[in-house]
Amino acid sequence: MSENPLGNNELKKKNAIKEQIAEILVDYELAPPGGMNTAHVGRWVEQFEESDQLFVLEQTLALLRNAYICRNDYLEKIDDILSVENNRRIILESAFFNIQEANRGTSQSDLLELLETQAEEFDGLDIVTLSRTSTCQRVTQFNKFIYFDDVCFSGSKALNDISWVVEHFDLSDVTIRVCFLGTHRYATYMLETTLARRFQGRNIILIIKEKGFLKTRENRLKYSSSSEVFWLRKNGIVLPDWIQNPEIYTSREGCERTHFEANDIFLNMADRYRFEYALTKAGFYILHQSQNPAQILKPLGFSTFPGLGFGGTIFTYRNCPNNTPLAFWWGRYEHDGIPNWALDCWYPLMRRTGYNQ
Image (cartoon, rainbow, N blue to C red; front, side, top):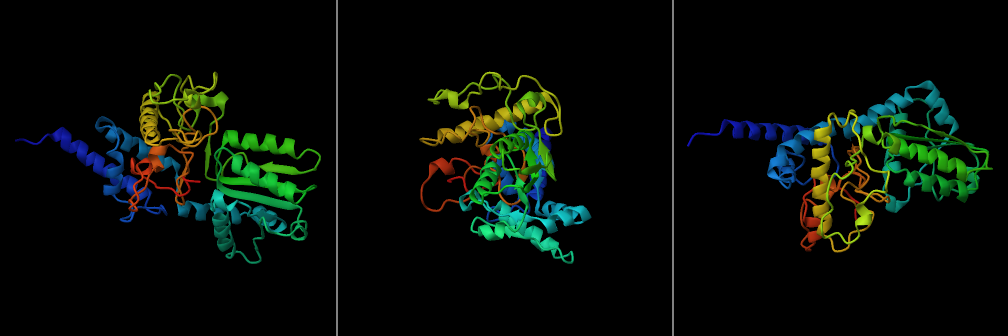
């Protein structure tokens, strides 16, 4: 029997893309036991319909090239920040908040640890950090503060953290700078307007960096057509019959995406729709395996708003954010002997920690 050249070519192309994806994710801290390799990527993509697998691989590769922040990216950007004399002056005059709650992850403390290590290369540049257990006497020694974290998606974590520290230590007549390596346009807008309203009368100067040092994603409603997050078009999918509360997954009137404009994440309309549809379909399959999925758990990622999910398109070497589509991170690489089909129904590309919190 003669070989099928088209089939062989597609197989070679798939394998080449799998290898490239594995290379991008090589420093992912929660890699499978055998490390990031073509077999791992292959096991993940084979869960999609066969006719979609090459397409999903191509789109995932293009996405990760634009969206994955490796450890070296962190280090290089921190070096860039510290190399600017004015930044070093601001740091010497300020204290960094290290106030992320333990059950909300360690991204802030890990980032500040990298910052402290890199700062050792600069004579006399000490990084001062304040925690939730710092004394009022210690905190009030400063009138300038910096809130620095890796990626801001909805902005709720930063909002809660900064609100807590201001109210707990009764801060007033101070300056608070807020910056991220990666952020979203709506999040920074929400932070700026909400914090300004909450801190009225305290004479607090808020300096919120509109763009991330490495990544900035457009996700404001008025720019939905050019949005850089997964945002399935209006009437883009029929909700599965098993859903008992369709309002959870249905965007409010006027909040749907109705048009398309090309951007760095989505180059053409057809590919955007097909990729979003495939990820949404996979996400609904995952949700269907859970008896009572949390209302904030959506096919395209955690979200408190009605709809299909946040649709995040930023990934880091530390942990896959839960605001990204479930198809990228849901599940576990190996079983621990305890049956849990809700988790084991899907094999993740980038397993994350914290999805049970």
